[in-house]
Length: 79
Image 1: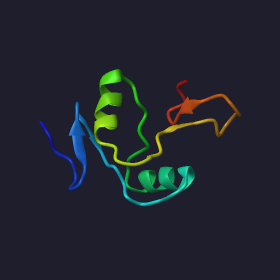
Image 2: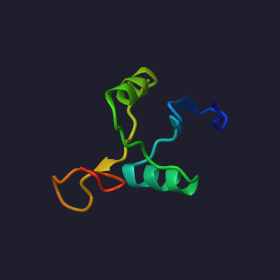
Image 3: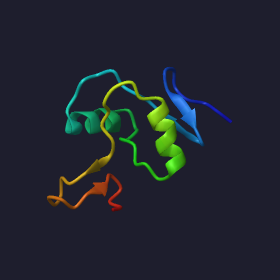
Image 4: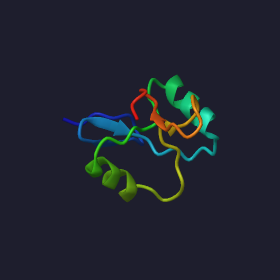
């Protein structure tokens, strides 16, 4: 069953939006949060391949070392 907002792509039960807006990481994260979504946390090779197939430029993902330098975590806190 597939039901995503206009201009979003469905993959394995989730909707993905590849924004054309040029923002820094924090602004991108905030824009996602404002719409009730989040920067992607890649959890499988299959998901990574789906994302790679749909890229035509550079995009931010939900991985950062904002809390502690060189301690990379997904937005949900997982390493």
